[in-house]
Image (cartoon, rainbow, N blue to C red; front, top):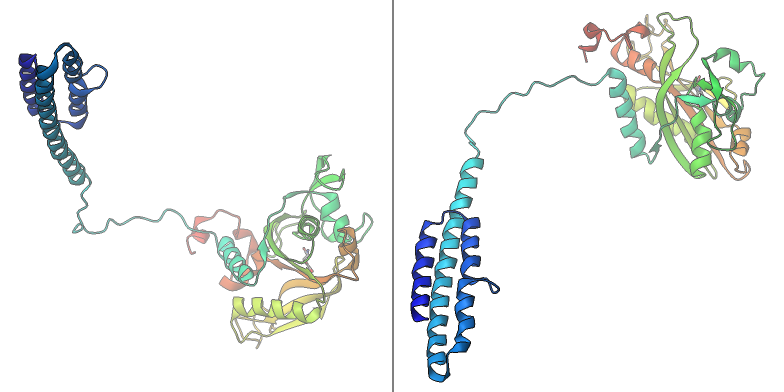
Length: 352
Ligand code: DAH
């Protein structure tokens, strides 16, 4: 038995000196010391066959050998671990003296996206949510819910593409026909129904109209809708918010004026104009010598819209506004042809 132990000791020392990675080392350890089938455990099991003193003596020796070998194992494991870390570090080493690789930017944002992002940041800083709505809209939301009834003359100004089939009634059993939305205003009703009051939101998005296109009219256009509904909201809130937006867009010295204008979903409705950012109000080609530029429509939300969305107009009031994003972009960059915006023309796009 003693010989067996010596043989094991030699064999273990020999094998361990040949092992060069941790996995193999662990296999080796298992081969000798696994409780179930390790060679050392076999020897220990045979201890039973010895009697009295001999058993005690051999037990002691076996334990000594075991701890000696285990020590060798731990030491070797430490060495191998260090070696492996060294390898990893060597492979992963970063040459901090290498000059920066130049990364060519791939593409850039469209000017409409730039202005949209800018407005989203401004409105979120004032506590507005930024919402999204469907481009394929129901006749109900696009017109009826915002107080444009079937025979309303306002429908003529916003002729659009009517799509065969009809809405499957996602909300309010709406079974009306599909249209490509003509404005972002249907989201006034969608947001009010979904979130109730108090509400502060904007909805940027693409709209469509059946237009004979020219330098100022496109069949596909971008708008930013906005709405605030709460208790005790009045016209001065509307004015304050829109003045902040105008000054943010065109500079602190910008003046804003409101002129009455009819929109079915507001009462009173206004047309918002700012002093021309190019000529500072003295009159130029862009502002058609008037010194003023129209940049938004707005007004106090019509009680019919509030009622239609399930709220009591005596309790809740609010205001709404709509910006033509294309127009804001054209004024910001001095572009006088709206059709270049979606032309995909790189000569135009690469300027931004
Ligand atoms: N939806 C209108 C349009 O497309 C713009 C508009 C005007 C929106 C007045 C509003 C508003 O919310 O109050 O011409």
